Image (cartoon, rainbow, N blue to C red; front, side, top):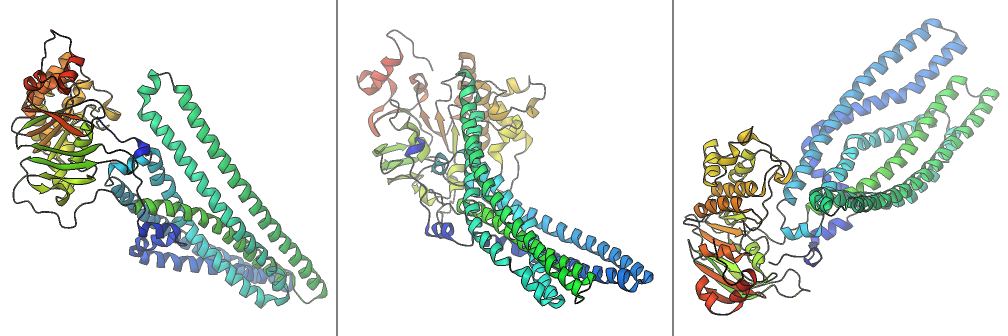
Length: 610
């Protein structure tokens, strides 16, 4: 059996489009096509935001008149009218803010949910080679953490950017109208803030990307430990896994503290510049009040506008930092979304006039997982007739499992070709090809749902339709699974736990066989489905497989030679080449590779039983 080591798989080379995306200065721009369907909602939200910001900008002017009414004209009725008007304006502003926040939040939820769905749909269609390069935890982190960053941009940062921009522009205009000399003093700090934003923004983007990458690594380590928990505990390696995870967390903390130092320095500079500007305005404005050229109300009004402008500059600088974080998240998400599979559907697949029968021909097939590694298959040619049972045997690493992976196009051949009923499998749609192949692995993995859901998984249509109950029960009966299902308290509704841990090995294997029965494929691949079972479970699984293989083409990956008795033909493979071929008795008498393998498993005088 040959499986690709993670470090040996050829890298998914970025396409020109992907490389362009990585270097794009506006990765967030790739969100625009996804936002366009909701443009009407966003326009309404912006109108509400504009009205709300206008009320906010009017507030200092109203305060100016209120203070002048109290301290200069001493008009109580005018004071009451102004106060009541403020309450009404704030009530209107509250309604406008609610509408704006609801529209933006709901829109961001819809956009990001569709992005996550598209990303997941793209990932599950990539070839296995993609997943050998990346850990599961990294992918789930991209689906959750990175898309959450983008959601924050759409739901909060976008509206806040628009609001603060309006405050900045409107505030500067009203400041200039109120007092031009004080405006010059107020705006003197703006170049300092903008310069700091650009300098610290770039550093913040790099630091934030480092944090997200290390979080993905930590998540991958945790996911790996959880998925292999029995191995971890059987070797009492819990402390080692905790150490590994803790090591990644320390890297996360170091990266996060580095980001915190950059943020802290940035906001410290912003705070000093902002309040320094306020002090300068208070000092200069106070002198003008003393000189009688400015009223107290006008000074307070100006000060409020100055605070608006200072707050807007600070917020925009902060949002620039958040934007830099989002840029890194967007690049990771869209680069993954644009990753190309090494195994592609044909542009114009062959249209089948009848169901595939199961005749397989491998013609001079050469295959290697990576150009830097030796060839796993070296010009191998093999034929499996329709309805024929062929056993593939050979020493470990000979290429048996590689052949089983090439037939459903989990990988593509390096050279040569494989045909299914005379059609090159690269000319068949992946759905047609894989729909005609049923695989019973040595270690079947079940989903965490019910037994019914696990069996019915084989009959789910492209439109999400489910097989009828009678079909599920018939498949379970054919797989000799009803005997244990009916003894369970919840029967078909019994939840099997993650990876089917609540069931025994034999029970999981019969569920896997029931799936194949329901699928009703033309070709069945058995990757030594009984090698890890006890004798009683093996007997039941053997009975199920006898029924399964009837009138179907079958490829048996045989690790234990006792399983080859049901085969019409035994093919011996060694170092990627077929070295022997025939029936069991013939090969045993030939004193070749098969004979040596057999004698290595059975002592003289042992009975060979199927």
